Image (cartoon, rainbow, N blue to C red; front, side):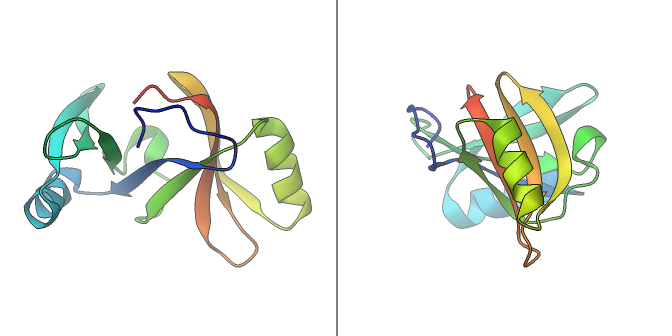
Length: 130
């Protein structure tokens, strides 16, 4: 998923942010066959999830801590946009709200939004580097 350049409008990443990422990581590894590698975040680790052959990273499983403390426990999709600022502005005018961000992650900037119906998603500008 993240090992190739994505176009504007494509889903470029998926994260699950939850209180006990290690326990839930093991659930998904057992159920799907995914492999998990630690991704250090200061004093704890989140997890980068890959296909069983480790040829493709497919998701992240993260703790609800630090910058992620306000995120709900959903599978969060990241949609690539041309301009983060312009998309956030349009989202607000169309009845959406910013839940978190904008934030920097490697060569990308992202923002978590809630649409007018209450669904949560993220927009991302640039390349995440996962």
